Length: 540
Image (cartoon, rainbow, N blue to C red; front, side):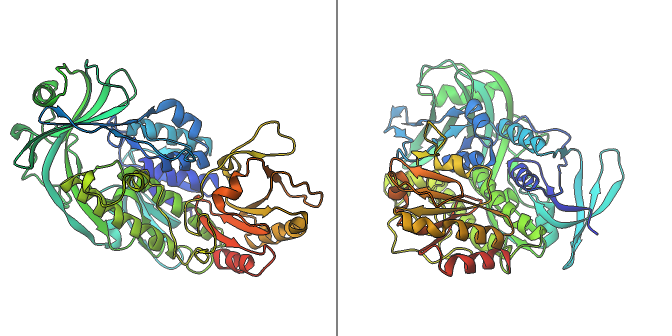
């Protein structure tokens, strides 16, 4: 008899995402963190549009939108001269833009969400060791008052950062290296008149080589920024490697920290406007490595976030990638813990997420060394990729055929949003993302003729049974279609946006996974594709 379904080690954004999603699905989940309190540092600041979509599905989007500030673009300066402005613009069908939010605020919002689902973080509690067999994971925790606790779990998820105990305990390789540069970070206010919402990148370049750099990311507040810059010799951590050889992250209490005077010296050299820094809230020295594990889990134990991949902070990809790791894993663990996981469901976590991690590590390293303009993609594609809206799982064993006959997204692709959906009792339209919020798998059955909808109720009922209740169904009806034969929930595609965005055909079934990716497109709805796909996901 196990003590808990899942133990999550680490209460950063990745661990809190995993724990919240597991608790939302009714699992007994504990989350522990070795720190006595959350860190007050604005480490990860950039929040990608795809992460905001995930927070929408988790039920946290209102709080995020009220706390974050828009990140509108970047102003570039080289040797004091202004370069081309980068505006962070996305297609109008993308529901959210780029945002800036200090990591401690992200953690606060996620911890509030965890409490909403009846969970809490066990602080000053550290995973010491573990071992597993085919039935359970046996764990040892160190406790705040001293002593240890032994317990058993069905699964263990390591979200415990670059120096992960879980990764080391699994014996996973962590291939890569440290970058030679060191940076100092500081959270300050300035009195310049530069436009709000824009990041600042100012550099000094000699013979094509950057020898001085200032990067400023806006934070909530009046002219407040998280600034990063080169580290002066007196603050260098060179030669003081971390005990495990992974030189990555903040210096914390180890070694000297920058003062306001260190930041001011760099501003005096590189700021595009004369300015004075004030109100230093925190500062640290930061080292960067690029590494990735050889696999994202083994048996009943998994790693996510910095425990699985670390890389330069270029483009604010790290935390956002980790949140997607956790979101991908949580619904699969929930099915497995209920005994409803088909063969290969848990193995798909590594198959789907490790290629994403490899791409992010390679891209951020390339951008750190050669600049974002070295990216071979056109500007529109590059912007979508930085927003993490192009992450997909085509070819995964967990999604259906590629659907090349369709004009819209294929199985494995992100499910796009659309508007204009109307319930019969509603006097206003709703978005598709509103319909998908807080749900597991969602089966959308599209009809543009009444005859196509005749089988919808039977198809939906059979699908709910095949998914053991972990599925909701909804009919999506063409704008002027009136049907009297459908009892399941239905919306009208009043603006024809669903048909256009998805390339939907009458009598088609579109299955959206809990992580917001398409799992299957099947025509006709009453064929054998959907039942076979659900049996593959959830077993017989």
